[in-house]
Image (cartoon, rainbow, N blue to C red; front, side):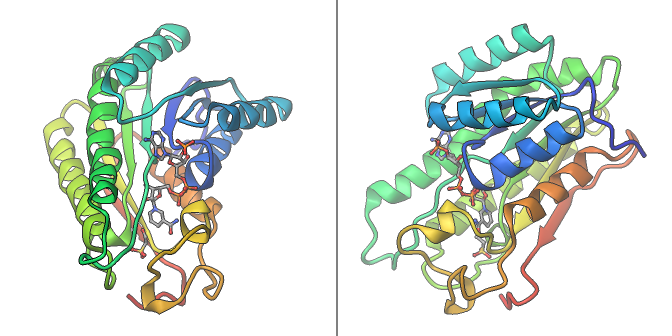
Length: 253
Ligand SMILES: NC(=O)C1=CN([C@@H]2O[C@H](COP(=O)(O)OP(=O)(O)OC[C@H]3O[C@@H](n4cnc5c(N)ncnc54)[C@H](OP(=O)(O)O)[C@@H]3O)[C@@H](O)[C@H]2O)C=CC1
Ligand SMILES: O=CCS(=O)(=O)O
């Protein structure tokens, strides 16, 4: 097993905060070239500077909305041109709204589907030709890691409605990709966290499993999830970790 990710280029969506930012830092610490993508360009630029100051690998950053398919195509072409190829895609960009269905705003439902499902399909579609080329190349392996949720495997409680539906959708898509690409050596894996302390769980109204919020739990830290990503992508070529579910020890559902 080699956990050395030198000469690997990893593209991370949702890298401006939370799990995506922690994952970018963890992959950079292993020597990967990391490409940080999110809408808040200032935030990804700040993270780029912080990683650069530590002298850990090469870091690129671009402002990108994953719901803008033309922009996604253009940015992925530019990344491949600038880095020489893409070995890994980490689909982390996501949003959540938790409201009883009767009170929910339809625009929030559509936004979750556009970001959490269509966004993942769009970035994956843009990355696949580059991942296939990487898998055919020197390293012989490429990875797609999608940050799903416990909510992608089961409905974790009331008001999960459309959020859980989006995560179930990406779980099905990822398993289908896994089956399609076994012989091409593109691994498609899912990370399914329970509650993690991030902007998503600490700002605004949010459903929390067991009717408690992140501060009442010994919630996971973004770094706990980043560890799982690093474990998944640093397996040897013959071994694919298909799914990792991780919860706070205290999370019941
Ligand atoms: N926190 C938790 O308890 C759990 C979170 N998850 C999943 O983890 C992922 C990351 O969330 P988390 O770190 O918690 O929350 P954060 O809110 O901290 O991070 C969400 C990230 O997604 C980005 N993002 C949102 N919409 C878009 C968009 N349209 N285009 C590009 N980037 C976008 C945000 O950047 P910006 O606003 O700059 O675009 C941000 O970087 C999500 O998919 C979430 O569903 C899964 C299980 C548990
Ligand atoms: O994505 C959120 C994690 S949980 O609330 O479904 O456990």
